[in-house]
Image 1 (cartoon, rainbow, N blue to C red):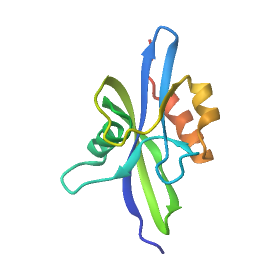
Image 2: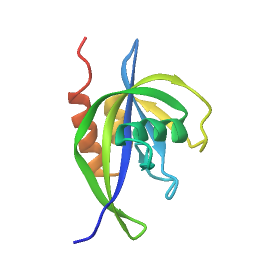
Image 3: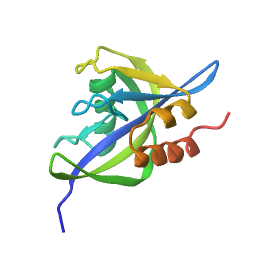
Length: 134
């Protein structure tokens, strides 16, 4: 059985006058793909901390972790088997993005249509189930 490279990802949302919006970023390896921010977990951080850091680096947004999203997604990328634990993150602000990728804030239905991969669309459904009720 293949060993997985552990990563963390962020499903970032913000609440506005017109309802919830979800953050998507263009993938670095294939810029036609729209994905959630994700990446490696550094030695000195938890998966949740890595998810927040990846959102900062890839999209220039800050946030706070609301919930872990299950199950973790597994897939192959660049010949490696990845397991990505995603976290629902509430948007708290912006800062300069290190990677300066194109980002989009979309309503949930638009985000579902824009996401390139089916597992990410299923993850979005799980994230929406965890949004705070008002």
